[in-house]
Image (cartoon, rainbow, N blue to C red):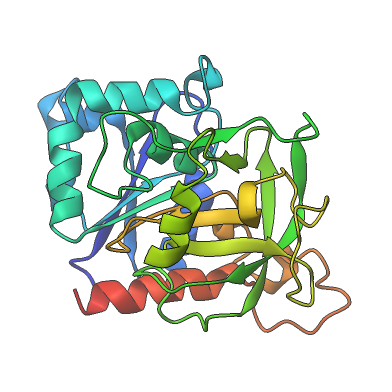
Length: 269
């Protein structure tokens, strides 16, 4: 595991990078917080980093570049202008790319998700303003629908409690709703919002906190090595981070199995 390293990529406005680093380290994966300037060489030589030295790339949450224009759009544009070739090589080599909350928004703006035919030139899906037009910060339940390279240890159908914290998390296909069938057929819908007992959210608030189409909370690319999700697994590693921990005898936070699953995959890469 000492050779497996995660790059947590930041610019101005990102957050949760420290929680994400601690989550990886808690399962034995070395993680480094890296600024975009370090990957594109716009820093002194001793501070430069090469993306291809890592096996996992993470876009954490936050409001990158203030979420001006659209959430994640500026971060994605900077990557396209300076780093897209290495990102494509990184993905094609089977390495893992994870986007959480703002990171999910970045991956859709980048065209890396849904990634039907690799990284697209233009976004094919969008994460737009919550249906109630309010910022949502609450614990939610989501069901693991389909396994991908990030979730092989998590049984399909398992219900997890993760927090969300976003104003623009509503997954939509715009006028391309026919693409929903393609996502379903490909098994690319990894997580869906649900009720505590695993029942369908059916778009109902607060079980679906943002009005996402088909209650979608997270999707992957067809190869399963690029995952974007709105909920924050890194915020529930410990049992005392669970919203109802005083009423339930949790052994650990629900987010831990997510990072353990990543560890098990990269061990066998």
